[in-house]
Amino acid sequence: MSFVERHGLWSDEQKEAAARLRRIVEEQKLEVIRLSFPDQHGILRGKTLVASEALRSLENGCTITTTMLAKDTSHRTVFPVFTAGGGFGMREMEGAADVLMVPDPLSFRILPWASATGWLLCDVHFADGRPVPFATRNLYKSVLTTLAKRGYDFVAGLEVECHVFKVDDARMSPEDAGQPGQPPSVSLLSHGYQYLTEQRYDQMEPVLEMIRRDILALGLPLRSIEVEFGPSQCEFTFQPTVGLQPADNMVLFRSAVKQICQRRGYHATFMCRPKIPNVVASGWHLHQSLVSRTNDKNAFMATGNGEPLSSFGRHYLGGLLHHARASTVFTTPTINGYKRYRSYSLAPDRAIWGRDNRGVMIRVLGGENDPATRLENRIGEPAANPYLYMASQILSGLDGVDRGLDPGPSSDTPYETQASLLPKTLREAVFALKDDPFFRQALGAEFVDYYVHIKNAEIERFQSEVTEWEQREYFEMF
Image (tube, rainbow, N blue to C red):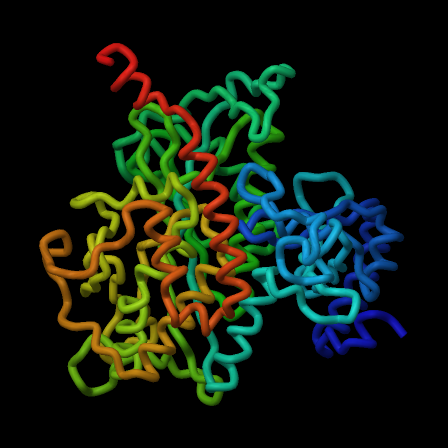
């Protein structure tokens, strides 16, 4: 009996997908298949197997070291893995032991930019079949299961900004290596500021076209490609999808764009605010709603009350606002991302909502009898782990429903309205999560402590570095 059969890990739909996958691999003469899982940062890690070995691993999994779950954004292992419990307090995580990546056959893709290469997204399990609690796709699936038991599905549309540059120097000399290494030297593809002008789009079209072609070939539900305000900045929007799919789409999209560009001498980055003169910060706006599993009706849609949201939708919105500070570490998980929260900048700086207002944190779109009614959360950065971003939204919103939280009136002057300010730094956001009893209960103390530890390791490294600002400010004067 296989590992999947023994632990009942696949649905009938996944079993059918596995059979189709085997046929496609043979028909397309695929030579290798990449098995990947999204780590704690939403970055894909895994192994590339020859096709025959990958097919043998479909139902029995592929081993990978637990240290993948112990790394910060510099890829440094920040837990003492060779101590009792490995720093996680779990025997299974000691000594850089193995866990199993179990492929999800529904995720199978053929990569258009890589010759004869397939791709599978995996879930991570211990040898006894239990999901690894620090694997964020597992965590998000458990939140979706809770939501389904309450009779709803989560629907999300993605609106993602990023930058694409031309690589001038890849910085591949040995002295440029490090942990992390030196980033590439780049130049612009456009000067920017001509927001949505056809001239700027045409200037970037050769690069955007190659991205568009391969993203559609992957089967991702791309809706539009736009030139954003800043130099070399663009935006991609996607049709709404349900449940696990929007988070899976996001991790594959980011990884795909970076690989497509890198192969052709370009550098794509989802870093919020690159340190490049005149460059503008990027955001990730998450459009979300809940739909009934019994009648497919939008639970946020108002009917006959003249309001922009149903009472259910208002309470869900109240939950998002109430838990905004504690959830910011999930929506904006990098030190750099907090440099985007500026007044009068089309980015939020406080937990408020408004009807079709781009200065608020939550922009309410739609209205009475509009089945497309939704909440656009504008707080996120493009580097966010989508599984944690979306899980935090669902949990916060449902708590608002359970407690009947009132979001208050629409804010028409978002940078002047009195409201709880969002954290101004990652450290402030980490403290907000650590001290929050709601997420400690909803996500589990084990996961919260784990995530806080990783984020604190990044912050401590940052604080130990002497910055250019400090050198200019103090070196001459003192």
